[in-house]
Image (cartoon, one colour):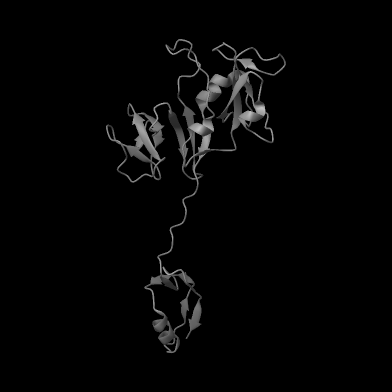
Length: 239
């Protein structure tokens, strides 16, 4: 399936128009809503979470997404606003912010901060500012504390590993990279043994004893297997 310029395939699933969930079996978090048949968003139950999918890179399990809340809109009836919640708190599992991103720190202050802090005033004014993070050992919003200000961390992909805070609007629009983990391997069938590469039904201890004492001219490898009782049987070889 596709939504606009984005191809939607496993592990993602596209939610049909008017439906509550996909019929493709996509796991929670991988469900995609296609607005106006051309704008894909990660499906969230909270309307304030609007993460638009710009690109999906299936081979390295990552996607480029952008927070599409109405930031920096001076003509908005609700008033001009800057990000006030760390992006990592708005990104639901199984996704996480990629470490290849850079970070912008937005400040909402009750009074002007002291000069020389390297801040750029936002278009919203009203003591709102932004700066580029400088890669501190504890890279979190708390490590960029300014007195009388609330700090919010927003990841941006930037170009060549660098960001300029004066371009904050474009950087936020261009999005950031998120990743999802490799799926866990399926568990082995309970109580089964492997003969070569084939899975054969469970054998009782009595059956194992009989096979061990007979000769078929064939080597039988019985690998370690954990039964429902919790006992572990070691591998044996007979011929």
